Image (cartoon, rainbow, N blue to C red; front, side, top):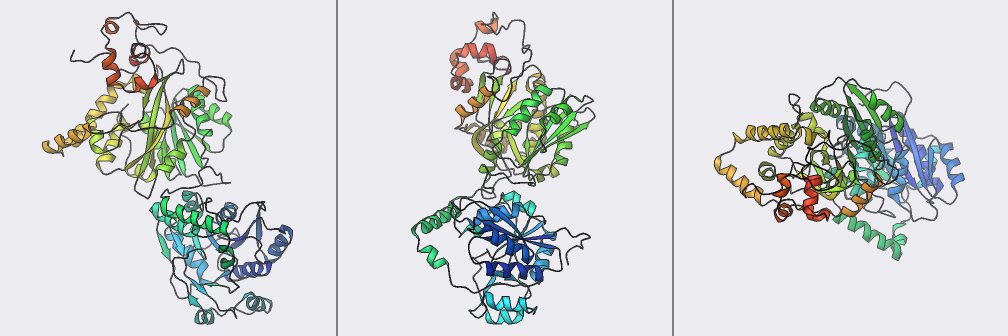
Length: 599
């Protein structure tokens, strides 16, 4: 039996989608659900998706003990997916059962579903439907209800016929948290048909199991009525939409849908973990870039790393309930990241630094790349920009992720451009004994043990280059940590395997990002009077022989090799800048060479 409850708050929310299909059948359905679910507090929500007489429907449903969620969609085609999503959005119970107005459940179904979901909250519970004969129509059940007679479910099983299991829409039970992993039923699917199969398929893509409740007392029945599907399918527009639904089912393997749709009171799917240390101005822009995300179901965990309270005001001023602020004693960034990861509630953890800016579609792009359950996370490219001028100084789309690429080449992934499943951070921790470079070591070990990542095909991050940037300040420590991480694994590799990895790594391809112009346009917003204000910082201190207003007068500059520089750093050509100017103004800042060591 499910756990006992001590209050009257709904444990189960039964969601029925409805539009102009006969109030008598709907009312009977509501009454039967409330009668048969007495073991657990249950609410019945009717999602009225644009019925022509909403007042009478509301009155009838509320008189039967249910409640109505109304969507004003009288001018839109029927969408079972959108109707179910609207109902689930308003559900108060943790356990959701979606169904139709012509389906009734035996009493055992409700508690059986909750028991199964308590054992595995990520599962989908289904019950095979049975068709009733014409004698068991809505009037038959109305008479039983009016006379307060019990339904003889054994007799109903005897006279009913079992449907094939490819139809799943009559009973689908899941938790609220599982619903938000999928982000609801697919709303591109209109009318009805295939949305339930797609929903179940995406449970599988997310490595979340489906379970058929097959106990003999656990049955659902389709109340007989004249078929409406034949009439609907004779309509050319309906048939065209059903064909489109089939195409989505057959060809879209993404795990999360409706990425531009916001839900009320969602359970966050993505946790953005953001350590910060005495950089409130940079932090403000980082948080504003979070607020500009097109996908809205996320939380931000800000960890103040040290005794300063300067970031608390910044977070408070944003007045965003998705932002959570925590303060720890000053420690390394590894401590702060481990602390934040432990607090995360999302299925995914998105990594971010307090001085970076996210492209507005970043989270959506990460999620679109997650297909078919094949990946543990995704990553995108990054654009380096100068903190003073706002100019883009480096374009890095990233490379194909593999152990060989991580072993023998660079610029495969930038750590702050990653989104990974949270459960990985329950098994792997950042090395808190190191001051810097912990990101590569962790990712390298994960990759060695089988990590699979998808590339988004997009630039996801605008990386700020400035005098307090850790990549610049502690580059030597970072490189030493990377060498140490490789050395720790090399002891397990034969010389032949090392040679093979170097050969494979040399063939690693640089990937492509197709949103360069839009990413640069967003960057300009932060420096040209847009909603996100520019950060006025001091110039980066690189060396006494560097002047930003012209070329440096140094021996390095005199020996500069333009052709070699363009060949060694392909992003220079993409930037459209003169290579010598790029090197003098930005290359030295990035630790680049001006010529080959062999010349």
